[in-house]
Image (cartoon, rainbow, N blue to C red; front, side):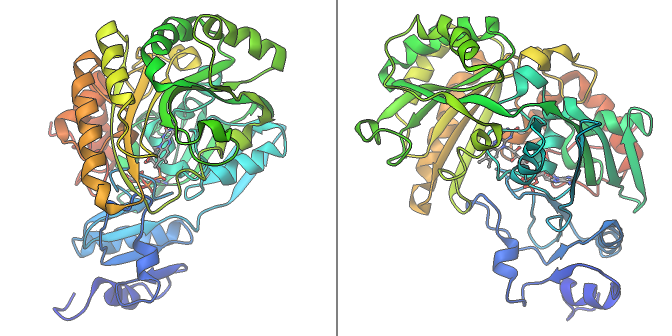
Length: 465
Ligand SMILES: Cc1cc2nc3c(=O)[nH]c(=O)nc-3n(C[C@H](O)[C@H](O)[C@H](O)COP(=O)(O)OP(=O)(O)OC[C@H]3O[C@@H](n4cnc5c(N)ncnc54)[C@H](O)[C@@H]3O)c2cc1C
């Protein structure tokens, strides 16, 4: 590249056959193209390559290599740490790869690498089917899947990766391969939890389950009853049937429907339910908890389409707000940890800040720690302490609250964290989160990306020997 040429101008000259769009800082849509979900992330890539197909992706990989430019992969742009973009480098933007093909007979769906979960949920819901994802529909399929995928269907159907049958991947060499139990099984193993470390996934194939109407929604109690409710919940949840998922949370009730006006803006603790089965059985499954705690302020679990529950948090959490979160895996919740939760959960710094504790048992425990890259199969919960606010003036307050909450509870954690809910926390934290699987991941990284081209992620360093 000459000293006056910018990467975007050079890319236009060197990639005349590019099928998608190349966006640089001089272009009118650059500001929109560079924005990601978390407004705390303010990076200025030199080139955003909106790829149309795998040839485009291979071209951009080669271009980044030849010009020694940092390379990021953007799926749904939801990553809290901003790992879907980078400063001064090249972004492979996959949002154009959004084909979805449902095969209801084979109970499978093929999904383009740039889809969001909302798009997938809508397509599969037409057939009364779903694959497990998270708890919000705007998240990208790419990042969520490659990190693991924790959500409303975890206990019944497993993590998202437990339902990943196949992936098509453009490697650092530019070659496209298929990863499955039969083809490149090492890569298939690594993709199931190892994040965007191994290549650009252009399509995923997922197993589908019969999930149409579910019983979903929150039960809320006063936040100052948090210790009592959490103590009952920690005993209840592990023995609940798999059909029932219920994550524990601290929230401030949003001031609008569907919440009764009497509890608007009230700090609460709660359980957000998803029961896959008949309504009367849902009540039976929830009873051992609900019968042992105070009368709630609101019991909002009711029959609804699964896709509606998936979108229930979308309005509360639009793109463009400040986010800072920390996370940990949890095996047990001793009384000391309950007391810490009660303290921080009653002092949420802003209306949108929250703590969620997602169950990881049930079907997720049917898979052994070494069967996929996702090591913490013995953890019972994944906790996330999320500071959220639209106002940049509150950025420091939400960050400090999240860090303080996390640091107070970390001694009671299992050690590592769900990589999709980490910030940029350093190599040791990544190692701790993959535990015994790290060395195998590093060997697979060396085989598929020896130069660590794909390093804008929770990075796994290629093994040396
Ligand atoms: C509001 C909110 C709610 C969330 N809820 C949940 C939840 O319920 N459950 C859960 O498990 N997670 C949840 N997450 C976390 C989410 O899984 C991660 O933020 C994830 O990284 C987002 O994926 P993305 O594709 O949108 O991200 P991006 O920012 O686009 O990408 C993130 C990372 O994924 C990699 N990547 C993305 N797509 C591809 C691809 N096709 N090929 C290769 N690499 C790729 C990139 O390299 C990058 O490192 C939530 C996040 C937010 C902001």
